[in-house]
Image (cartoon, rainbow, N blue to C red):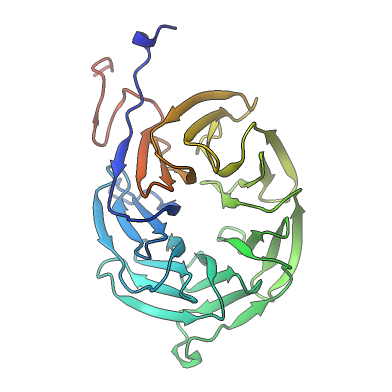
Length: 321
């Protein structure tokens, strides 16, 4: 295929952050067809954006240290952030106000909402998981439950709302699955190195995780390994397309964004746009674009199908009416 016949991938650049962008999350598609994106950054100022265009909506001001993780509630009315200032904070996404601040004894690296948005889970340098009830003002910021078990830093936490299970992972090379009712560990998925990233696919079918040069896809129902793909570089983050045909990967030691075929593991596309390693990647809920966050302090939005009319992209003029 000649270069002329292939539309060029031109990413949209979202500026505003002043330090490395380390975490991204898209919301679900709302009733009006819109969706949102939240970013966590070492500058301590998480940002909310229009997911289709990357347009800035607001900045959450209040942390006094790097923000390592940012998540939205299912209805996008609230956000939760995990920070190096030893707190997790819950925010009103309409006003930007802090609704609650939960103190920890060390850096908080991961956070997420329960399916109904009434609770949050956190984890970090303390190697401890905590659940906080957002409706219990009488607890004065104390957790309703906590769990030990990790032997090293917890870097990622996910609350699987469909199954009401909590997933956690980090440097002790194991994805742990917890029942939030008792906070007992009920499953584990062992890997061969520190786990850099972990996320649940958009439909909740797969848990994706990365360690070293390897990408893992686990069945989120049975916690069995479905696919293991080796790459030639250290993988920082992976996101699976909603239709499971492809996945995007970022590298911690180079500037490239790579697209792979999910079934075969074959590399399909390679793009360069960032000026630093890519720390976080995520597909949009409709699968039309994916976002990448980098050491260079920018977020870039890339089309899944370059040349298609979507959002701020005007298309290449070859689409059917």
